[in-house]
Length: 172
Image (cartoon, rainbow, N blue to C red; front, side):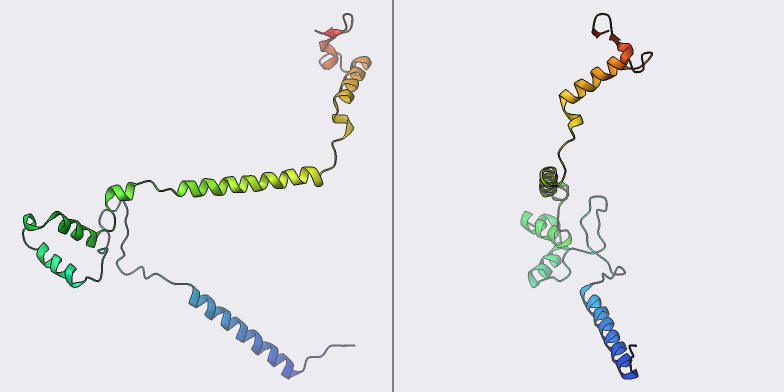
């Protein structure tokens, strides 16, 4: 029996496919946000002391009054007003930018969690997956094998038999 697709069936499959792909494209377009790199941006970096724009773009009425007061002599400004003016232009000071973060604790925690989980997997495999070690790994088997090699005098010039004193019955 041969499968047949009518033209109506083919058309409905194509429209479903087109509708699905367009909704996926629209969904991915809505999720991703683009940054306009042509506009001035603010960032706190030690190697670039002056960002493209001030930290605060939109100023309140009090900020505008303080900015107007900034044009006058700075000796008339209080310490708090100078700090407020600085905070309008910059988010962090140099010591705040250079301060160490506690991110290393999270990274180390993730590493130890990964190593612990890996150890559990290896332990589980050793118990339930891998077979028992062969009998040739046992100490008595290896002792018998060594005695057999010495008895047969295998490789007496440079091998293990050359290091055995056959007259005294001990290692040279």
